[in-house]
Structures are given as C-alpha cells and as structure tokens.
Length: 324
Image 1 (cartoon, rainbow, N blue to C red):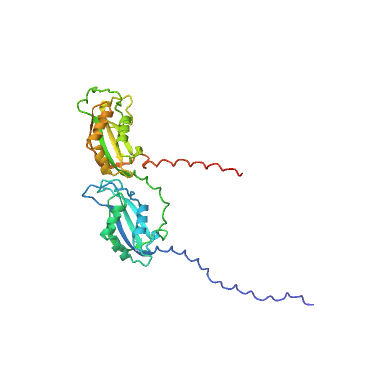
Image 2 (cartoon, rainbow, N blue to C red):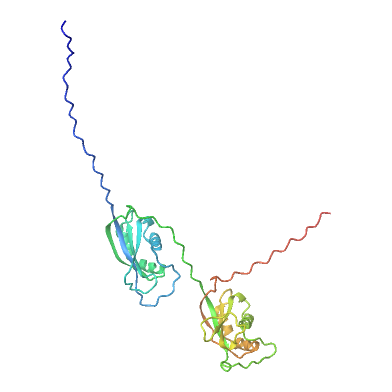
C-alpha cells in the first residue's frame, strides 16, 4: 500500500489590513471669557473750597459703595451686576483720611436697564451730591463711559463679601446752655478773701451743682446738669476738686436742653442778676459768671442721654375680705 499522505492544508491567508491608528484629539481650548456691555466710572475724593463739616455718615469702602449703588441706581440693576474695586493713589490730592484711595465701579448690563441709562444717571449733579452726602469723605464721580468689557473670573461678578462690622457710631450732639463760673479778678492769684459767713458753702463742683440745680426752673432735671472743674493752666479736666486749690480752677456748667424748658428760658435764667446774686449768697468766695451761650455739645459717655428713672413699684392689692 502506498504511504498515507497528510491532508492538504488550505493556503494561509494574509492578515487583514488594519486601518492606521488615529491619534486622540487634542484637548479643547478653555472657553474665552465672555464680553458684556457695561457702564463704568471712578469714585474719587473731590477737593473742597469750603471747610468740611463733620458728618455722621460712615467712611467709604468698596462694600458700602457697592451696596449704595445697588440701592440708588435705576431699578433692577442688582448688586450681583455691580463690581467695585479699590486702588491706592500714589499721590492723593485731598489730605483726608480715606481719600488715599479711589474706586472703579463697573455696572454690567443684565437687565432691562441699558448701560447708557445707568451712565446718564451717574452723571447727574443731584446723584453725585447725594453720593457725597452719604459718606464722610467728599466724594464725586468722574470718567463715566460705556464699553464692552470682560466679565471677571470665574465669568461672573463675585458675590457680596460678608458684611464688615459697622463702625462705631459717633457720640450724638445735643443743645446745651453753657456758662463759666470763676473767681472774681480781685481774688485770683492769692489766697482769696473768704467771707466765711455762717451757712455759706465752700467753692467746689458739688456746691455749684447744688446751687444751679436749685436756681433753674422746675422742669430741668439734675441729670441734665454737668459741672466740670477746669484747671486754668492745664489741659486736663478734673471731675472733683477735693484737696485742690480752688483758686486755679474755672467751673464750666453745661445744661442740656431736654424736657419742656426751652433754651431761651434757660439763657434768661442764668443771665439774670438774680442768678448771680444768689450764687454770691451761697458760695463763700467772690465769683464772676461769664455770659451764657447756647451751643452743641457731645452727650457724655456712654453717648446716650440718661434714661428716665424706673417707675415706682406697684402697690400690693388690698386684702380680700373673707366670706361671712
């Protein structure tokens, strides 16, 4: 028998042609920050030709300016559409605390209020006058314009920062009637000629307070009268004159105008010859009383007028009668 032949194998096929590998696409570029229409201007300190009066308004800051513009600009601008940035001036033109900075204000157009209308409102003289009146510094607005600007990162205006603690309120002012009681010229510089009559009081803060309290109309409370001993040659003010030479002090009397007694009535009372004569009859020193004046004075610490005295306790109910 012929030898067995191995079965024929099908011819080998070449491997299929694979398409060339495609490189991965490059990463997409980050989106460009959007552009938006906005009105912008600069808030700065304006030099004053007149003396600047003391204001009770707060000092300027970026946060307070942003809140102010959000409240006073035309309707629907919104605080989140306002950006205020502070920049320091190398050479401030106004030598006032807080005027070493100016503030760039940007208001984005994201409502039914056009940027041109916002810019027109900021340019009005009345609006700038109210801005100056709202802060301690003499503020004004300059360089008002409308442009297409980049929206700040991260592509939207920042949220309002947490509010800073409010500045301490300045002490309030009240109307007072002021007079100065001092030793008569004949007794200044020496030991003074003490009359020492029986029943007269020694010169002190307490004795002057007692007389002024008794000589004023009945509607003036003791808590509205302040007497201070001021050394004639020293700047410090003493509240008590115990163990001190009374000849070197003047006594400043301030009467706060509160209640139903008018300032004119108080001026007439303390300017009368009866008031001065009564003082001479009570104090054992020859005294002179200055002309009384009406002025504004700081309410003494803690910056509030004294509270009214508490109401007296209620009477207990009458005992109940037992039933028969």
